[in-house]
Amino acid sequence: MGVSPQEKGRAAQRAWTRGRIIEAANELMAAGDTPSVSDAATVAGVSRATAYRYFPTQGDLLIAAVAQAMGEVGDAVPTEPGDDAAEALAATARWLIRSTVRNEHQLRALYAHLLDAWLRERRGEQAERLPRGARIPHIERALTPLRAQLGEREFRRLAAVVSVLIGIEGWMALHDMWGMDAAEAEETLLWAMQTLLDGVSR
Image (cartoon, rainbow, N blue to C red; front, side, top):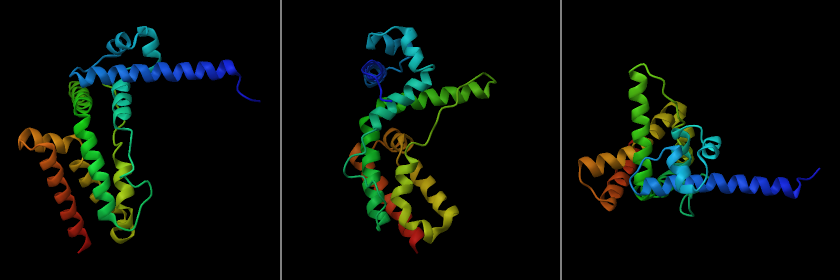
């Protein structure tokens, strides 16, 4: 039995509403704010009750906003593992580094929210646990040619170190502490990853 036009219309409306709330959150984060669900609802032009149906917590909203902002992988990033891990990792890293810089406000807002949740948990307060690790599948895909050579333990360690380098954490260290601009940070991170690959390939 097919889906009725009314059901299709309702599904389209729900998708539009959810997308508009996320867009509103991204607009607020791009302006330097860390929006609540209520803030995003106001900018999106929907009721708070509606917004909370889609995003029960601020963390849910921030995760969705960052996922949308970072979501376009682009032609430069391999969707299937090739034979050259260094080439695939460099392409993946360039996309992730540039996306991080381009969406810096959103990622810093999410990072601040995660740090606040950690502090609340340390104080014995209730804190939501949000999913992490969206960059991991891209990194593991790029490194796939090395999996058999390294074995699972070493492969996991290599992917973990790379994930530290090419996320918001690596950008904040190089930019905030070392004063690097985006071009110098990218060059430094690509050099670090090549050095890692050279080391594990010996």
